[in-house]
Image (cartoon, rainbow, N blue to C red; front, side):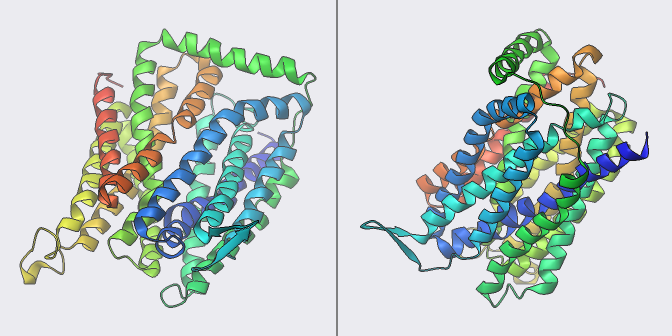
Length: 435
């Protein structure tokens, strides 16, 4: 591969390094917890609003991605759309800094609580982030071949984990999040600055292909391609069963990412403890991806994925049960064991195992899809694989919020994650593969 191509691949991979702190610090660990516990009127209302914001983003992106993708390809505007989406995310993330508890906004004659305005700004930032990811991912087929697509994608994935880990460590070093809510808000500015600085190589060195004329023709072709792929993929029963299984367990993972920090707050984790939790989970995710890559070669991808699904399910079950191990709730363990058997410690254990399994589960799913897909259908079926992963990604977060609101506790919301993993395991078992 020539130097120019390598430079483009590195520049493309840097986008994952640049945008990962948004997922890590805004969505999963810090701002989500800040929104639910500090900005919202109470935890239950905050959780319901947060779930609505995540769900709205998913629905919006699912419906508009094919349209904007067609427009970008037909007009040669893909890079422009990538830059525009990125800066929408960056500017909205800066805007999140300005929201403080107790604020009210007057629009016309209506007084609106700060949590509503903050949620709208978060949704704008999240939509910008998701569209940026969609446009960036679309370059992968231009930069790779069937022989090295997994290697290039995995390199970018790993670089993203490093970006998330470094941003967490930097937040821990720079900000006193335990004693100063202003420092928690500063993390929004750090994420925006990080995204702005480290996305520059992508914008400078990544090249766009020549424009294709005729948006209507290109969009019609794209839409027909989705219909055609759906028909073609339906004749491959193993792939259909796998995609149904992935639909459930992928939604469960998305819900964990959206509510991990929020649920930790429910168990009494401080902002400092959540930051440390995020660092440990990112490290465990890197270790898990490395170790299970070797395990996949030894026992096969099907058995390896089955292990990750069961461990993820049991970890979520442990996280659900953790609050009960409190003398004021249900289970009072002997005093000499309370230091090692309490809600926080049990959640730490659950979180570490979730961290260990999330990387292998996602990379193994992609690997299994590649093994099941005929060589002549790789690009077509992988496009549908990505689309199907987005199309229902709002379901888990939405149910989490509905159950939390209905039962008045985030534990009820976590049950939907356990149920989704169990359904995923059931459909996955039906594959009965030996690979």
